[in-house]
Length: 615
Image (cartoon, rainbow, N blue to C red; front, side):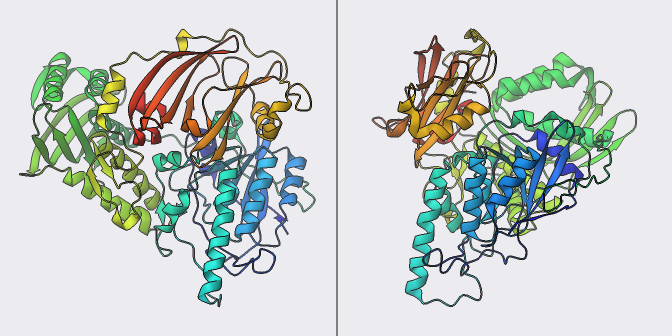
């Protein structure tokens, strides 16, 4: 059964929902059954289940509530109880607090969630682990923060007594069903391989790039109700019949950042920017320095500071800087002084000369105009004869250890996971990659990027090639009309019967409203591992149209588009050359016109987003 009750909810978690973008965690595969489904559904488990699923409403001002599912999935849970609650409350968004449970039950919930057209959202302040994520990926739109869900190996329940042959049969049967379910939900089943590489007593928290590469991110979260930020804190208590009892509520007011916190955030942004390519780095520096700066003990005009930065950037165009966690100190009065230690790695533009070491830094920042008024520092240690970014790699391993080895809900763990991801992105930006295709967790290590590097990385030559090509801009292809009236759905019985096989996906997509060229809905759905199809439906006439790319001929298809433009970018793997390409289309008067086509690198490039490949 499903129990409907009131449960306290963390205030920051509610506030965070509206700000979440492009994040979805994924699952630890835990088996709970070993043979035919009806007979042995409880023999395998993840963490021990302690309670049936409960549901609460989180009230939102002037909008339907958000539903929270909490507890362990069990074979007695009825997904239709969730359907009845959705009907009674009008909820559109669902979130979880669950350690997993029965896999069969979780998949049943996932299919119900999909049929109801719900959006699923997961926060790091709560948890959706193990079998819970099978329910989570049922969302039509699904987003989550990094670190909110981890992966590791499946395991049998401690009280399960099976012979080896029965156990092998059970694992094979359950694996096949999970893979079928993931394909149905348009999630790459290769995720199963990753989960099996992590021991059951360990946990792997996925990065944002890993979440995207397995296609577990889906849809646009921006249409979540803006009223979430100003919602009342106390959820309404719901009876078993779904009636609210009118619990008291308290006003939720976001706590503003202190001046010290703002100064630390600026310091982080400063070093992040200096780790970017030269144009972006120098643009940032030009914005943040005052007119006159005490620059290493000498009053220097801003132009002189920027010239010095430019000369350094030209000598060392490849750079990565990361502040040592715990070394920061800030004190604020009229201005703020931020001190700390930063590790760096840099490489010359000509030749193979590498610089690596640690330095003390001190920035004085004026919070009133957000400008640097003083800067100084000194090198405290350099690494002789190294070719690797040894200090940043060491930082990454330390944060990875904290991220994977601590409680998934603690603030320290979440901060470590964030720092690990940031450091990893900086290492990738200087062409260092973690792991190669087909490697398991214990085999993966940092290495110079090559053609077999992990799918989150791309050879630098691809980026350079694309950067040299003028990319069409969405603003140059404005929509010719805007949506008028209500969405008209296709006539699948007559005029649009050729699209009847995809009617559920098309209806769900169109009900979200136009997302392309004024009054069209772009709807992408899976057709197998790495395979997807695309339908573009006119919300005004209800007529669907096929997109000219998709299927097994255009694997790993990724799309980029927006509602106010006719321009659509499509990225896919060209099998004849094993190259990743991006095509730009103008959808003008229901005709697809190819604007340009760009080669962005080898097959690995198709595991990155279009934005990363053309930035």
